[in-house]
Image 1 (cartoon, helix red, strand yellow):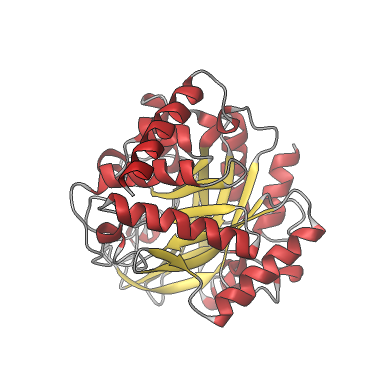
Image 2: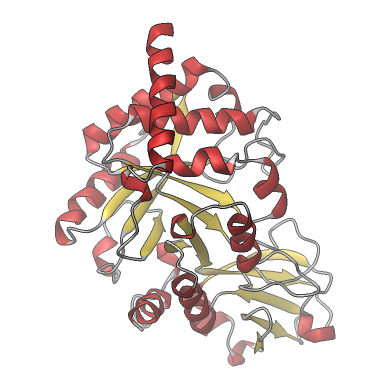
Length: 369
């Protein structure tokens, strides 16, 4: 084992050096903007969606069993098999599997704290990829080195362990397999969770979760997923991108996130039409439900924050507030990704969209301009 580990460490050094000399596949300019869909389901409905211009579907989520990445049940196995079969209808599509998710990485800190645990994980991932024919992995560890609301265990050393995990994955996996990770879209994560300069040369992209700027534990309203910062809300998509740019991260490896859902808050007073007011999170709505549940017939009035480039809605009679992405904000974000030479956009989650004239259609339209 020790000899194997040492040889892998040398290979990591070689791969990293090759990146900075411009000789790895990951460093090549991207010819196509990524459009990445996170997906939860059994795969039977995938043909219902307009997936022709998707570049990636990420099946969410697989978990750890001991130190190994496993397909734990028949639904996961069936879903992955169906998604891989679906690739035959789109030769450019890649299917990845994601580890973790909100509350789904409760043992990640422990498993990835040792070289043995990281190696066992990487080797199990490779076996899984070969068995199912998937194209790579997306790591959704929420969050290395910092406390999460889901109360997953963490330790300060997670930041270094995450780097070591990426390194051993890159050396264990064959070059054709992709590695990405979902990153928290907030200041503490950006600063404390990832050693960006060591990690980014070894991955294909970082999928910034530029949503949930207000979340289920917020006691106030705000923008769920604003493009730009405001005086009342500093965290935004643009804030995340500018931070990574300031530390030298290649723009073409940054993928920004869109929300195909709304968060709704109750007990919100009417000042400022409910924006930046005290409130209590009361639930979610998928984009496909907006017309029925957030429209005028239910008492909501739609508003647009031109500074944040973000929509919201307020119902004065019920004192409820909703924050979300819509066609307009998705257009602005997708154009932002193009104009700033980013890797592309991703979204959570495919089932949130309408089957026609939805947010996915708007992504395609904005990319075609």
